[in-house]
Length: 109
Image 1 (cartoon, rainbow, N blue to C red):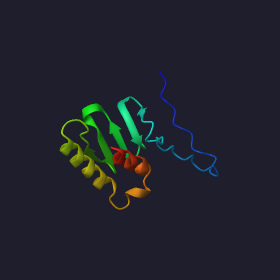
Image 2 (image 1 turned 45 degrees about the vertical axis):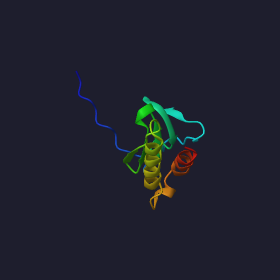
Image 3 (image 1 turned 90 degrees about the vertical axis):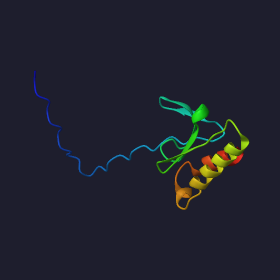
Image 4 (image 1 turned 45 degrees about the horizontal axis):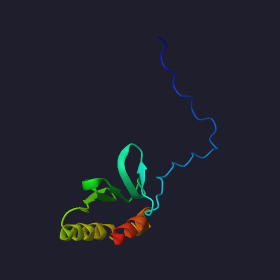
């Protein structure tokens, strides 16, 4: 068995590195699946998004997860949607991809 070879150094120094692909943008009107995860996504799955998964629906804003209870008592649904909207509308979030779609989805509920 031979030893693995080392990678050759980059000899084309004038070539800029290719940009990393960003997450797929999703229209809130047509939720889609993302990768192997179950459920539907609203917003940008790699940034701000709502993940609709039955009783486990939540919003992720800058790495912070906030539960959204869509089933059950109306008061609980209203309370969790307000908490999600408060988390989403914090300063600085409006520039992040997925913000507008998630805000529209929350307001539509």
